[in-house]
Image (cartoon, rainbow, N blue to C red; front, top):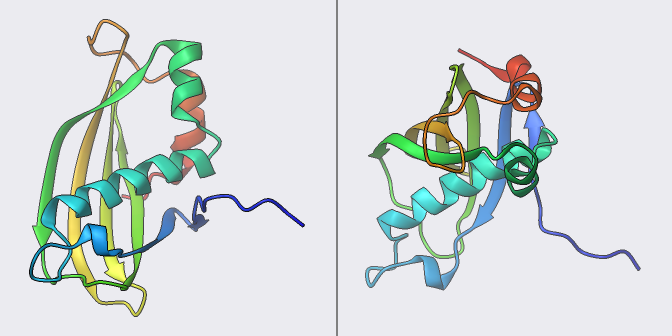
Amino acid sequence: MSALAPTTGAMEGRVHKLPVRVYYEDTDAAGIVYYANYLKYAERGRTEMLRTLGVEQHRLREETGMQFVMANGEVKYRRPARLDDALIVETALTELGAASVRMRQVIKRSAGDELVHFHAHVACTGPDGKPMRLPDVLRDALKNYVSE
């Protein structure tokens, strides 16, 4: 019997796709996904994309001192997700800066309906909270996946 593990999703070309199920705890009194939970889904998408590319954030922090912080984000809600919906979080790198990464994310139903668009600008900081250049190991893992 094999051990079950959480899914990390998969890369399809330069886009990472992470399946997410909507649970009762994700919804509000109206039965739709509470708006802040989409941001949690997006965070999971970014984390699992890195994991799929061989970058584990805790190990990166231990080895280089670098950590990610959200510098800026823009979200557009288009349609609601509901209890039991099967969603896909698509994450694509759009830019690698000296000390930051920009990503485009789309959350959609597995049937294809686009629900949320999110643009994230994530800064790299050192243990002191000051900007830090992307470590070479991170830049090497990401450079071939920049899609725009």
